Amino acid sequence: MIVRNVNDKEVLDTTYLAHGGAIAQMILDRRTLKEIGFLAIARLAPGKEIEAHVDPMEEIYFVLSGSGEMRVDEEVRQVGPGDATWIPVGSAHSLLNSGQEDCVILVVASPAW
Image (cartoon, rainbow, N blue to C red; front, side):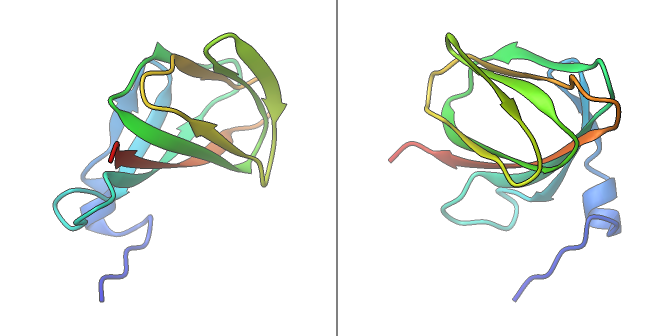
């Protein structure tokens, strides 16, 4: 069994700037996982944006707190706590923090089968 906390050194050591806007960390990734690509947490400050990009994996963005404007290809929706957005492989996607507080999300990614 492996248990990771977002404050563990193994997580904090992976801190990076994700797609121009969010401060992100890998909670679990390919160093540990066998079938799933990764589980990450990202914090997006008010007014900041995870810029539009395309990934080679299927992803889910799950909003823990805050709010934002989620775009997947041409579709745009407001998202908030408890919302999960499925992003198909090859879809352009972005997230703009349109709220007044940090938008914190979990990102789960998995290679296409």
